[in-house]
Image (cartoon, rainbow, N blue to C red; front, side, top):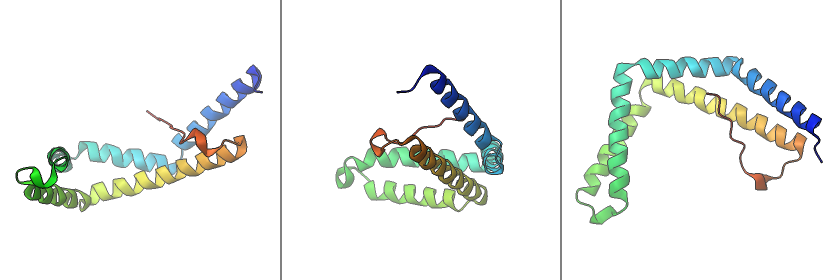
Length: 129
């Protein structure tokens, strides 16, 4: 059974882990590229186009072959996704995003082992905003 003092210490250690992540070089690189992505007008146009095509495709996907121009919408969605994924800045951002996600997942696994948390509790969600 966890006492109040143990609970408070656990919360303090959690904040220490979050601060350690926030001060890591990986996190700073991720935030730097996130800022670059958000401030790049060309990339924002590509992202907006991708989001629009994605929305159209998701709507058409419900009905597939019965949806008018399904194949055209699907092709346009795929092309916009390829265009987005080939943008150098976006690609770098996704690399850092995946590395940060893997880093946080590793911390999650270690915490689960230390705290003896079973997988039935699901993924631990951490929001750094």
